[in-house]
Image (cartoon, rainbow, N blue to C red; front, side, top):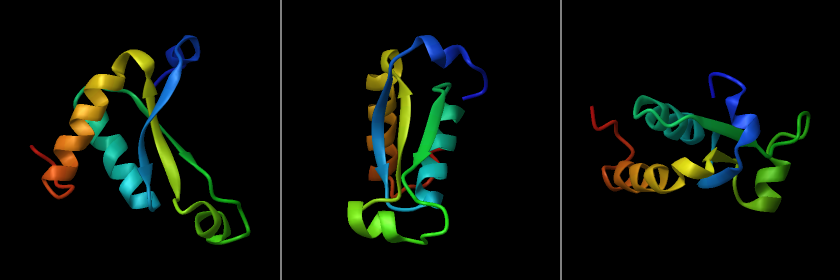
Length: 87
C-alpha cells in the first residue's frame, strides 16, 4: 500500500501464499489493477522455514475490506491463467 489511508479500513485476507515470490506476484498484480495490497509474512527471522513448516504457508496478502470482492475475482482469474500477468 502506497500510503497510510488503509489505517481507517478493515484489512481482509484474499490470498495465502506458499512463498515470497507468489505473494509478491499477487500483490503486484492487484496493484496493477488499482487495488492496494499488503503482504504479511508469517516467517520468523533467524528460523528459516520453521513457521512455514508449522503453518503450511509462507504468508498472506491483504486488501481493504471494500476491495475484497474485486481482489478475489482478480486473484482467481490470475491463478486460472497459471499465475501469468494478463497484460
